[in-house]
Length: 251
Image (cartoon, rainbow, N blue to C red; front, top):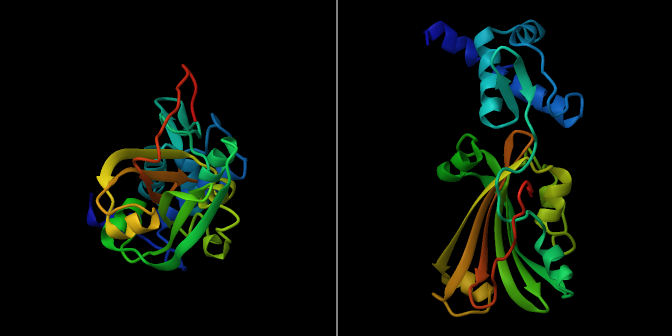
């Protein structure tokens, strides 16, 4: 890429936002507002060039990144379309732990251990696809079933997706309930492993340190952005994951 083309692509608006990001935000906002629905064709790159007064390369970067993020899909010779907005191939349903507990006829309560905001360290910022030191929200919550602790939820949240996160009462609403209502789920990836509980986690789960935990890590996306990174610790002797998958079904 020539230096002049790189300069054009990296231009910022008066607020300091890269021009290609402003185009991405515009396209995502049109989809979120329902102006373009799943399967609709979006304006051509040439039309976006005229609308924003930028180079073709800048528009192409915005469209290319949204295609990589599964917000848009390109069809050779036909144009660029709004992609299906659904969770991709998860085996676990995305739902609030409070709903799971109530579905069993049991009582849920939670205690807030930490609620803070601060700059993201480099590795965490990379997970959110944000620049280092970008502001993030952070919460740690212990969930109880009939008075017994069954989950420590350690969650980081993107303020661009959930700006009012810090104002919530997480003894009344779970982060999952709030995020599912505020930032409609677009996609999720997860991993599950068995790990020995460190001392702080063991104390919150009322178990001995180094006892095994089932640890679920999940990253969710909404409106083309990474919305949340969460690590959920469950005591191995008090918790199990179960579910079923039907052909053609999705979470």
